[in-house]
Image (cartoon, rainbow, N blue to C red; front, side, top):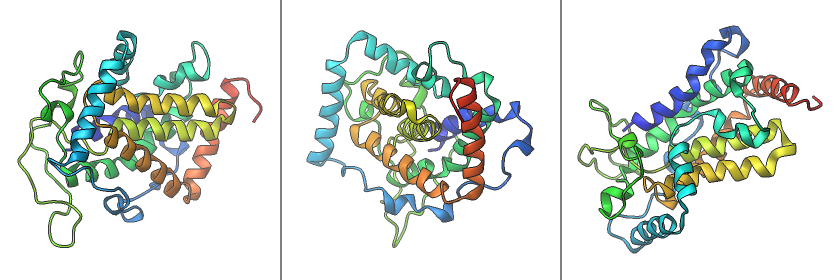
Length: 263
């Protein structure tokens, strides 16, 4: 089920139009052959297991402990975009004024989207509200996870694969790993590389962005943890690319200049 992953990538990659294509490397930062997400991530808790029950209970507990303001933030965080981190950098900050930064993150999102897609297609984990009818995501968060008709499962189900046998086509997209958590952690990692002066705050915001998916009842803690692992590994692999490092440096220079920081 690729709806969520494609939505996340589109939210980033649509930013590229503001910058000439020549401003970024035309080579991919990462390719499926570079990164075996299916053997890096552990499988999610088995259906019907005690670990799965604890995961569901953790969702209910966090939701019960969340203030109305925290739930409202979770709804806001359902929309993926760099401006989720704008206030962390400076009051009134606007990424729309930084074409190199937006283009860079757009390419990162497009090039890395395969990993979350494969993970979701492999383990086919149902959302928390599907397993527990007492979990009711606020606002339109539930509708935001609807599966897209016509999606095809591309994970390698069969002998020698870590993926279990194919299940039924679900009404809602799959849960593991969390694409929002991957986005939040990856963005925090890369922005922290650009602006290490804000590292603590950026990481806190990136992790909060992933936690919003639990508060909203659309992901389990293990989904969010897996997204953070995925993000860390993706960045580590991309860092091996000279093109990635060059584009990261250019985006970082633009961001630091806009914040009035030394190069």
